[in-house]
Length: 398
Length: 211
Image (cartoon, rainbow over all chains, first blue to last red; front, side):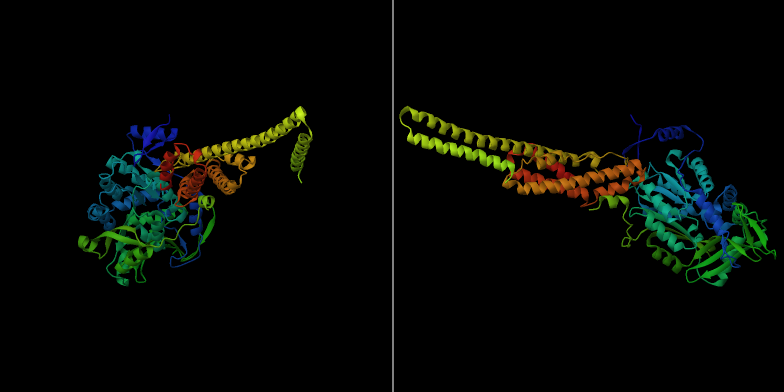
């Protein structure tokens, strides 16, 4: 007789010997252990990074680049990120984490007492997820946690501490190493979640101003809303904000990231991972500009200021010429103006259910920036472009 | 003229000629010699009516058997459509499954046996041909679904197939409707074939319609 396990809605499903064995082992072990759902092709990711490092010469950070997500891949960048999160000289990050429980408490009522499962897109070091999970499990004894990130190491960083801190059962955690910014992967994630949780609502989160790290933030948020969000689901989004859009504030925004040496170490750790460059932090530039009428855009770039061409060897043993004054963009981020934030949500096809604002000026009296934490839902009247017919539709049509 | 028609005409022609000769013989004979043509006339009459009556009885019996097995097969078809394996997969219980097939052997036998050869059966024959096509298409699609899921290892597509199979007014709804119409037609034309349990079957099938 096959072993069965009750899932959220009381149904029974058969377990394979591997899964039933894992279930038993995870129930008995005291050390932090959980299940990882692996399937993405690592070679594709690697090829993407290599291609981005072969792009054209640019003195403004518009050529070679390491895109968001890949900056966190590997043990060294992960450790550097964890250090940046604890750096007292990087108060914005610290304040964002320390104030999160209060801000979460102020938007939490809009979710009601509905039992949600929680899917964290880019869990970071897991501190914010711990706050959310602790709260959500009051309304859902069967609460499951699905952290999703390109970096396996970041997932391990987030989940390990979280299991210890919350005494959260590893049986209810499934970490998914996946680049969720790719549409195919988001579709795959939705399919996985539907198989796991059925119609039970899911709370997704994209915290820590992660959305601002993507070149096309509107397209990303719109794609995530289309692929992942069902009417019963909610999306928790955290973004950095600015009261005004002007060159002076753009310079201040860029300077904010210069303050922290640990953050700088994190940014260049990706460069160390993917190239054999002798990295000099003096060559790290922080450029702040105004991005139209929507946000302050900060680019962190590494520039060849040696006055001569350098030959870089990439991990695939290919040599790339890093010319004089050429740049590699290591990170972009934004601080959104109020209008820009409204446009981001409207153009992405989501509506705000509830939001709360944290003003860093009040907290530190040194910058005028802040953070918004918002609960979003799909717009009820949103025109969703229907997906094309599947093979099943072709078989069962007419 | 076909060979069977020629034989029938020759047979009945010979009988008629023998009957006429016996009649003339009866008319010209006298006394006890009249008994022999009289016996021949009565014997011929009994032979002809016996053949026709037996033929008719055999045809009726074949037709009744064909309709009975047809009605039984349609009831089994309704039970198949109400089978849990054809119900929508719920929640996380979406495992590969072998679907039950709609039976169509009695329809095939009824069509090829010639048992439904009466003038009144023309409408029923048309409906049976149509039903056979629908069932054949349905069973073939179940074959394709199983082959895709089992042999191509596409278990992740089970929700897609489940949705496509059970979508509103989809193939399954249409085939249920078709079956009910055919059952109603058979029951209406031949109420003697409807078993006592038939009325009880209906709510199950109709409940399946609105699922």
